Length: 257
Image 1 (cartoon, rainbow, N blue to C red):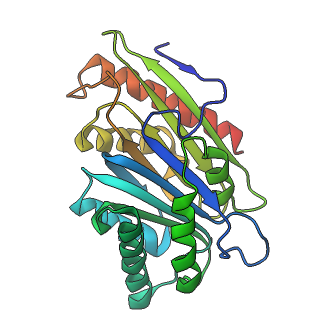
Image 2: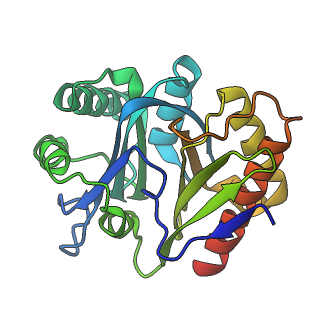
């Protein structure tokens, strides 16, 4: 086996990711955390699959990744409301991306949005206050806070990480966070150097190997700082990296059942 599961691994095990989760007010029945953020200083290559439960933010992010999948720097994850439908919902997505971009000193096209919850429009006043506050609480150990922000009670969340040691002597880590419920979301991070073409190939293979992911929102981000850097899918290191990814997905799937 070219990979091993890490004790206490998390979404931030791969270097370069800072995350948090705060209470913003979207979960109107509790004081639980409901706004999650992931930020990187350097751009990530990215790929995503946004199933039928992904709502307006899934459609908005799909369009955004078609324009820019080479330099993603921020992910905003909201729980409690799905963002609604129609022109006003699309307008709110644009406003959220612009708000986060301005506060984080990045570009709107570098933002990914993922929301889950009851049908309805975002309360933009809450989010205008919540996004800057979330940015103030980012750190590299915030995985538990982010997991709580993704939770759709009473359904569980889980996070884990694996270390991949390729046969060519290179290595990389992969972190994952999965939330279950009516609109499941999977967030995967890695420090392997992978092109969007290879990430797209990995996503297609995951959907074939794990059909339950088809209805979920799945996002993979690669922040290249590790030595593992395959250039084609025929490279042994890519197959070994994918084996680690598949093993992580299998482990997280068991944890959220």
